[in-house]
Structures are given as structure tokens and as C-alpha cells.
Image 1 (cartoon, rainbow, N blue to C red):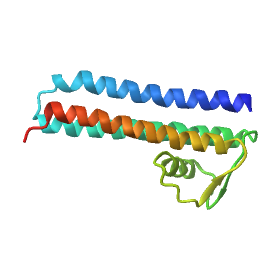
Image 2 (cartoon, one colour):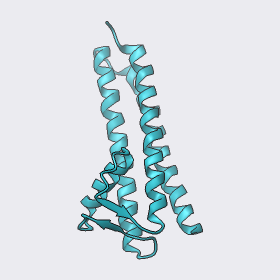
Image 3 (cartoon, rainbow, N blue to C red):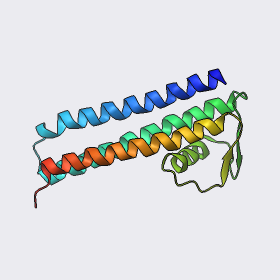
Image 4 (cartoon, helix red, strand yellow):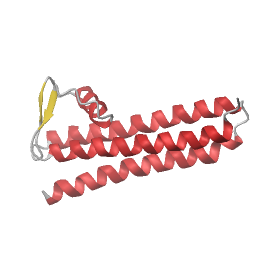
Length: 140
């Protein structure tokens, strides 16, 4: 359980760091981009979506590695256990959509819950970040 907890902390820390770096670089880069202010907001949205996608892939690759190590549990249900199934599961979990067609077992349940919480926090962070950026650049 301790090893699984350390792995979970590492995965979440990596995702938060990725998100922080992307938002930080967007903040630094947007003022220097010489395009219409409304397009700057659009670029911010696109880069934020890229950040979320990278974070989802980090979780998906983590599921892949942990499941194939045979020590942390498995995913049961409508799944073929290829990488894209793990990406699908990660998208559903990260966004808290939770179709319920794939279920984690053993220690993967904890990572699944943490992914949902992480996704919620990072999506909220993105929303507040984009609100601030829109206040700077959005022209009526």
C-alpha cells in the first residue's frame, strides 16, 4: 500500500507540474503574440486542452504500467486491455464522467479516485485561469 501511495503521489505531482508549467507559459507568451486579443483567448483554451490531454495520457500510461506489473489490480468490464482502452478509461475518470463500463480493482481504485479529484481541481484551475485571461483580452 505504501508503494502504491508513493506512485499515486508521483503521478498526481507530475500532472500538477505539467498543468502549472503550461498555464505559466501561456501567461508569459500571450502578451507577446501579435494577434487579435480574442484569438489570444482561443490559443489559451487550445493550450489548456492540450495540457489536460497530456495529463490524461500520464494517467493512462500509469494504468498501463501498473496493470501490467500484476501488483496493483486490474480494470474489469468492457475493456480489451490495450493502451487506447486505458486512455478511454482515463478520459472518463479525469472528467468525472464515469460511465461505469470499466471498474478498477484493488489498489487501482485509489488511483482512479485520485484521478477524478485531480481532474476536477485542474479543470477548475483552468476555468479560473481562462476567466482571468478573458478579462485581459476579451473585447466587447
